[in-house]
Structures are given as structure tokens and as C-alpha cells.
Length: 461
Image (cartoon, rainbow, N blue to C red; front, side, top):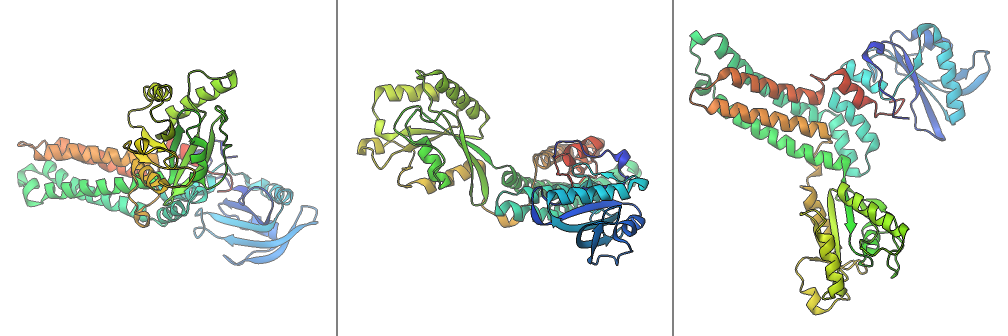
């Protein structure tokens, strides 16, 4: 439902309608309309004008006068609405068939004014275009809906309230102040404005670069809350990969037997550690002498999952420590794994004292001993700083924009520090840094960017 392209800017003034509640049955369902001057449509559908922003109980009727349902109607006259346009919401019983009948009645009644079905994200897109939300806040709407952990939901709500946007705007204004000083020096050289010394511009520039770095750190944390970390458990057959997945998930997700090759395909589960979602996958045991074609296909998929992982957890069996064939198999696997693989040694509860002397992270998937240390190490690998109360939800594009801002500021610092400061180059780097920040809130967004963002929303939002 969320795959179609978002409404183009050329159609932004069409009145639109959609079912705004979640698919499926529910106690209450909502049909939402938005557009300019919807008062005539309100009278047609409701039989009378409505008191603004006040719920009114009334019958919802078909064109022939028969009653479809009885529910609440709320009219939000522009500009005091979610989209900034006139908005009418009809709250009925949440049956899918009933809501489709009600939507069809709205489209029929609004045919004369060009009422059409909304496209994915079009209500929120209009909120952005009508200055009700900036782009970061609009994205936070979808992130709040999609949040998979409590920390992600709280961070998305923080972004939606404007915390992230306010910080970005504050940084942008500080850059604007510097740009004004530089432009003054360029435009009026006869005034002999000692830009670098009298205005303390270099100190200001250093402070801005530091602040951008701090914002970048929090944005990375927010992106981690939103996207999570892909963790793949790899190793030879019967080292306890499925048992470890079950232990981390706290549920019997994967079948555990002593028979090699039991796991034939990837088994995945999303868990959370300190609010950070981790997408953990158990894979088929890796070995050269696979027993049959099905197992060979499973091993091939294991390597593909390893290639796509953020963290590869290479699980070793301490009870087979010193077994030449087993250790040769581990060495062959290690030769193909990334250099930063996380080595974990399982079955510490059943291993010999000599085996337990092996350095590294040791645990028992059977007893749970060492699992907390593994969780902490996974968070460390993810770069998590354990400060969810100060984090705002963020996306990869926000992180990239802040990275470009920081790069341009670094170049600006280099120009400012030069003996013969090239103020025109300094001014250009400050402009580029300002533009990069503007991409986050939409001050310098393009129609293509808007389409890519809002097409991932659901219809009705």
C-alpha cells in the first residue's frame, strides 16, 4: 500500500480523501479529507455546517438517503488543521467494507470539486508544503508510527515536537551570522574590517564545528534506533548458533538438535537491548562437505547473510577445542569472514579448563552465563552511547547531511587559518555548509527528494 509515488507538487491543490485508520477491523475507523474550501462538501456529507473542531454525532448517509452508519464528524477549517487546509474527518465503526463504502460516498459527493484518492504520505506532504511541519518533523511522523522499541518511539516523538529541527535551525543561524561577516568583508574591503580578529570568527567557527559534531553523534544514535543493527550468527554445525539465538530472543525460535545441518535456512528475530533493535539471524552451519543439495543452498544463503550483516558473530565450540579437524574448519571459515568479526566462544559450562583459558568472550547459550557481556559488546560494536533521553530519531540522509556540513566547516577552518585568508573560498564553504543543514529540515529540498520521502508513508497519512 505504501509503494506508489507521492503526489506531485502540480496536484497539491486537489482535494483528497483516504481511509486514515489502519487496515483491518477495529472499533473505530477514520475517513479523512483535505482541501481548500471544503465547507460545501461538509454540508453535503453531514447535512449541515459543523462547529469547527467540535465532534458532532450524526448519521452518515448514502446518496439515496439510506444510513451507512452513525458516527462522529469533525471539521478543521484552514489553517488550523494537520495539513493547513480544510480537513474533514468522519469517525465510523472500523469495518473495512463500511469504511470503503463511506470513502466511496465521499468521493461521489466531492466529484464536482475534484476530490480524489490521496496518495501515500500526501496528507503529511501537504502539512510540510503548508509550513505546518518541516521535513524532519514530517519524517518523524512515519518514524513514530513505525517505531519498534520504546526508545525509538520516544525519540521520534522528540523529533516530531521539533527538538531536532530547533537544533539544526540554531546551527544554521550561527552559520548565517558568520556568512554575514564574511560577505561584509568581501563587499566593503575599504572598511578594513578585520574579520578574523575583531569578530572572533575563528573561535565562532570552531564552536560551530564542535556543535555540528555533537549533533552528528546524536543523529547516528537516532539512526541506530530507527534502523537497528543486523547481526548474523555464523559458525560450523552444532556450535550452538540456534541455542544462542533462542537465548537472546528468550523464546524457542530455532530447532535445536545434535544432528549436523538441522538449520537449513536463515532464522531471524528482532530483539532489543537498551531500546536498540537488533535483527539477529541464525544461519546454516558452514562446512565444506555439505551432506546434500538443500544444505549446500542453505550454506550459500548463510554467506549472503554474512555479506549483508553489520556485525558477524563467529561462534566457536569450546568443547571441541584441540580437535584438529574442527579447528581447521574454523580457520577456513575465518579466512572468508570480515576482519572485524566478533569471536564468541560457546559451551563454557561443558568445556575443559584448558579450553576455558582461551582468550575472548565466553558464554553458555544453555545456562545464559555470559549473555549480558555479549549484549554489551553488541551495543559497543553498534556505537551506542546509552543516552536515549537526549537522542532524536534520525535517518541516514540526516547523518549524511551533517557529515557534509562538518566537511565544509573543516574546509572553512582551513581557509580561515591560512596566512592570506581566501575569504571568497571561506564564504563558499560556509554557504555549502548552510545548504547541507537546510536539506535536513527541507529548506533546500527538491521535488525528487520529497517524492522519495513521502512515497514510504501509508495512504491516509
